[in-house]
Image 1 (cartoon, helix red, strand yellow):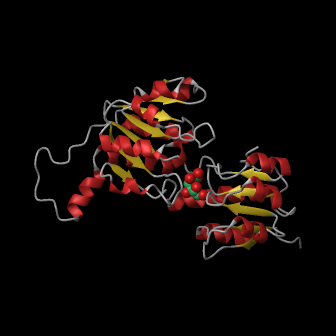
Image 2: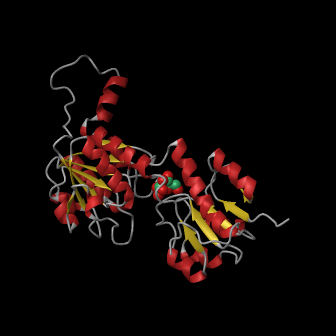
Image 3: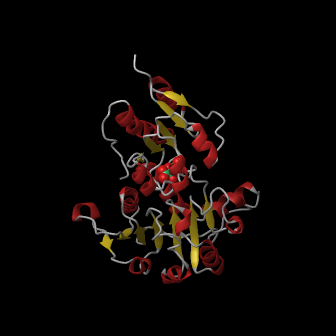
Length: 322
Ligand code: 8YV
């Protein structure tokens, strides 16, 4: 019988994913879920045919250069792939893959949770109640804003941006977006295209960041661009924290330029800028956009479909990055 290919699995996986890994591969699992250093990644990959990684693993050009020859494919358990130097992989002939499509709805749901929480002051309300400070109802207690009739600006109109737009239509919002290229009319579904981010910001009562993190988008929401937003706007981010200049966002939340923010992602996770913690108008989540039972299984299975194609079936990976 042919030997099972060996996979280095850098993080603990959902049980159903580990079961499939064990069935089809000689899987080097990480039951303690400790994050490996670059040196450990390289050492543990010795003799492995493939790697199943997460966004917490940094696949730098140095790591790629030192990976054993045996590694043919690196499958990341994520749609984002800013942690992988795809060019370095390409140069060495290592296939890199991601998991697009399967976490669209879960992430769009969290974007909406953040929009609602920010608009309706959910953190302040929850805190008041839990701290025993709710002394009774009155007409001006904890007033938020309506979403119906407000303009939602979506920066990055890929799968997740479009799923946020679909939800927003149900809430009676008007959709605007900026994307590298304009969508075909049927996908636009009545949304207004802005050829520049600056133009989008000027009409965004609520801004939702759904773009990928790239060298071009890093720190893109800086003080000058925040100043373009309407006074009292809301900023929501479910994509990557490094697209936001934290000091500028915190300043705008303090000054009242912005009404509120909802953030699921942060620069330098999990070590977010501590100043966010003292802001009552910041609704903060620990990167749970894709954290549902069904979605995490689908992410693992999609990563496995990529590994299977290359290592079990000798076929092209369905979600190859180059
Ligand atoms: C994951 C994500 O939680 O898919 C992504 O890009 O950010 C999240 O779904 C995480 O990155 C898992 O590796």
